[in-house]
Image (cartoon, rainbow, N blue to C red; front, side, top):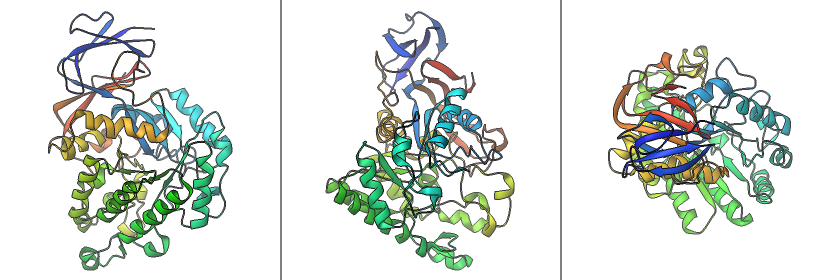
Length: 427
């Protein structure tokens, strides 16, 4: 295997070194200019552990018109990710060992990122019977994360049983917190603006009530709970309270909930229709603070591609969801790094170390040191780029950031010691 040298790169923004990569591992941190191998210029750039996404919709099997494992993997690599967790709401649903193994095998064949299937909690996401959790955990895919994302496990007894089940093998239930009766026909955040626009409101309490219930259930059975795409200040307070009690709960926030607010809905542009909905500025600021102080453990993209006909229509008929993989790092740059809320080790922690820990992926999120797996992203914080929707790698183009200029670019990505992205393009 080729030995690569990332010449003059700055791990975590610190002193420059040559990172030498051989046989999938970091084998040397040499003085700049002394590493031996195929040299890749990274002078002045910043090296971080490869990003890990806990929440990616790859759509395959069943909705290959929106995304495939290959196109989603390309978007992930270009965004600096070396591991993604593929959500279960495919067609057929990933609720059996057979389906999760299919996703896992295709991901390995594509070979651009570590594709980790997420198993459904309930059969067909219907919320009535537990799925084959044990079989998925014991399959070749080794599923550790289970979620009905897109739907809430709203039955408290079923949620308790799921938490008890995954406890046996150290798994985690990732809950899409949405009380269904409180969000029937909801279109946007509930508040003065929803009243002005005549849209059915989506109250913050619909999320907060489920998180509150579930942290109590997790405490009761002493199991692991993960809160998906937290979007309100109230949810942050519930999670902070739960952690203060020692509840084994973790949480994620999406890039779009760190930067976009409900005011954008006034345009009636369906690209801004997402689940959970865009919230108030006060919620956005609370989410940033919670990600900074560790109350929210991880950034997760909730990358949700849709074919154009499902978004290029009237608001009420449009699908919910946004692309996120290729813009995630830049959003973190703008919202967290530039304002001084996170340093580079903080970015590594929230985008790599913690997601890998939550997902139980031992080969990811490792420190940049000799002996670690060579899953590395190299970024240029000084560069700026403008998002062009049709030029993104995804088969879909439903980004809320089209024509927006962001700071920070992904220059190189290494997955398992191999370059997947060099100089900003797929290797």
